Length: 369
Image (cartoon, rainbow, N blue to C red):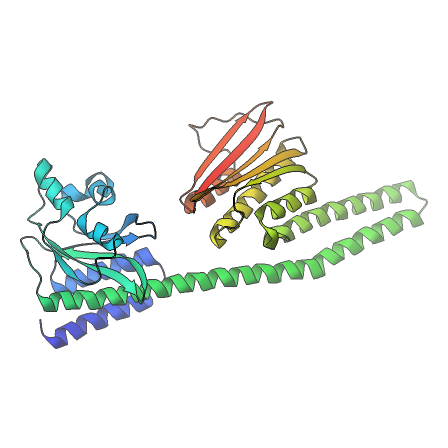
């Protein structure tokens, strides 16, 4: 491959990477483009987290035996390249003489690898930040030349830089969202909240100024509606910008429960500091659960426990209210419960609910840290 061809490949891939905003979509597109431009036939990308766990983020033309059962052979177990990467012994593009995943297929006589016996692997990184591995190969290709490995290394740097850009962009978007929530909370407090308070006072004054009983009832009704709207508004402002979250999640949820008129018994075991995303999820899930207690449980007493171990956090919210019939084999019965489950699973956590008529409801989530 000539120098001009290499430059052309890098240019096309750079243009593709600059357009992307979603990491998995970008990885799938760039892998397909890379194979098309280099003439290689098979490729896959592993994203590897700080704990060394890998996930198959993109793949092109995997042999059927490796792709069957939801890519089980690629997603499960370990291999030489992932092990070397986790041990920080894989820092540049290299030939993999013996691929453990392919070898296992051959030893087990599990199927045909389509002539794929070897692949090249190169780490994806940007500066000191590492993201995973790029792997490429072709049937009956047993060796990669130095210039081929150099090109793959250059492409891997491009991919790593794009992944870092996407990560920073997502962080900026999250910061902007928090800022917008705070602005909206301030606006609601300064305008709508004050108007509702004024309406309540005006209705009260009107009731006291008239002798007509029907008019008094009307003003009383208006005042009750204004008070109810004030309560809803305060809850909404809390949801947008929780007061006391800077003092810890237990403090914030306890204050929120009191604002809803609930009596809460809170217990914290372990360290109370969490990563920002985990704390945000705990707050949103806890807020939803306490709101459900207020609306549906027919009790004002609720218990909250938070247990922080070295590698996870477990939050349990329980009431002894009316409960409801729940079958774990069926779909969750409300949008709120589905939302709590989705927030938990988005952080690779587990969601558990137990409820029985007359015996209350318990919600427990566990999120790895």
